[in-house]
Image (cartoon, rainbow, N blue to C red; front, side, top):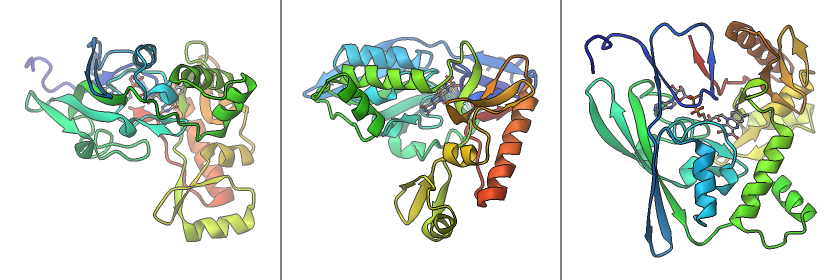
Length: 301
Ligand SMILES: Cc1cc2nc3c(=O)[nH]c(=O)nc-3n(C[C@H](O)[C@H](O)[C@H](O)COP(=O)(O)OP(=O)(O)OC[C@H]3O[C@@H](n4cnc5c(N)ncnc54)[C@H](O)[C@@H]3O)c2cc1C
């Protein structure tokens, strides 16, 4: 609210794990550091409220340790609690919206706080109002989650069940699920503290059934999942891999050897070089499949 900063462009940053800076940022960078985790139990419901600056995985570990079920499939996603509603983070069959109760956010223009319910947030696949119509207008300061003392173990992702079997676990606890998810993630994804990356660079494209049927005739192996309402979700990683990009290096940039959906900085690459690689990938997927990939990562220019 200080008049000195009122007209200055500003960038709110949590862990910086879902953004690509094309250049140095010419403005005010606000690093979110609001801490604290509180909980309230009512029968079997647990309401956990966490400051936006808490590390996401610390919150997951806290909940798992206290037997508060609901976040375990979202283990080891990098970043902060405050960023979790921005793109409705999701992994291994669970999305933030499944456990989201509300969040509190500061409106920059008016200097007032507002509470957003789940309905207010307009959550979709890697989407929310904070990424679309309200982009840049609010700073999320805390998030409230609706968890449960009765676990609803979600093993919809085959890899979790397989790894539990490997460990000889037939009736998993939420701790088992958290550990297995963490294990799978470490084996598949590059650690951003050793090799620069922002996780999945593109969203999985969602197309209508007619378009899918035509694609399926031409490419019978196309990886796909039902997405409701006559829609089909394609695996962006598979499409990219089919175009020969998996593990490919271009200058100091490239795609990860175990997952083509993740673009990596092998060292010294600029944001614009990574962006250029993403544009090449979008072009080649469109040329081969006629499908448009959309970037998931926030591009900051
Ligand atoms: C290895 C790896 C794996 C990943 N796996 C997954 C995954 O499985 N699922 C998934 O969904 N994502 C995944 N991601 C992406 C990332 O972890 C999430 O998007 C995470 O929520 C980003 O948190 P952050 O604090 O780092 O956000 P940042 O990168 O700091 O910010 C992301 C965006 O949110 C805005 N923002 C941040 N905090 C606030 C706030 N308090 N108020 C308002 N705006 C804010 C920023 O301005 C920016 O636009 C992965 C990333 C990496 C590097």
